[in-house]
View 1 (tube, rainbow, N blue to C red):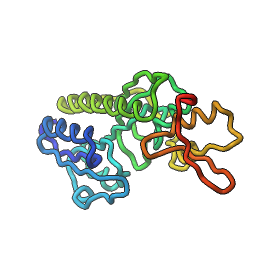
View 2 (view 1 turned 30 degrees about the vertical axis):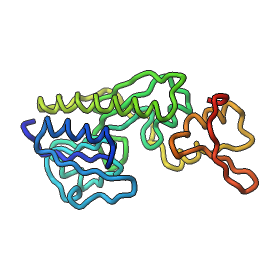
View 3 (view 1 turned 90 degrees about the horizontal axis):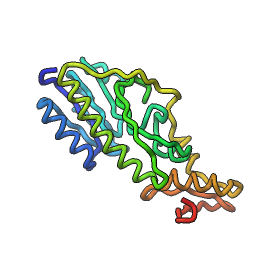
View 4 (view 1 turned 90 degrees about the vertical axis):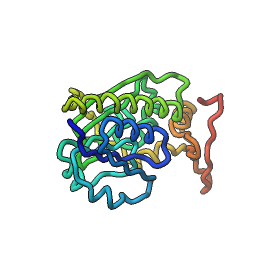
Length: 223
């Protein structure tokens, strides 16, 4: 593709997104970038955009179908998880299930989240010491490498095509919220897995006792 019109959607204040914007603008000068945070409405200048290519990189928005249709070449997303973990909470469910490998996925966007045809997948090992923060950081690093590879292919006028498919429906916010709940009747192993999988920054798993909700804190004895 020779100097396509590109719209890159990212996350405001995120260093990985800022690097992605610089990388995309270096490859394709006619790149417009729109960034936002969770809960922000999609700006009018994004909703009114039309051109060749939409790239969603760590963006917080679900892109409306009519906007996807205005990308004449493709609308692609970089998902911070492998095809086995579509939807929200991909890192959390991988840690809870004690998966051995994780990864990132580039795919075409459709009206339904994380269901479009897969372009490329990169996988890497999960270590016993990984928590949400460390696994997410490695996923973001692999996402950027994947972005570079996809942009290089786009520069040659084509997109890769993977034989991989999404094996399940996307995880939902309700399922992620349920994963963060601990009950007194759970085994110590179940509690350990949930604490490892849902402890991240200000987010903590919770337990309800006698009408009160308490946050749980991971210690070296449970992780």
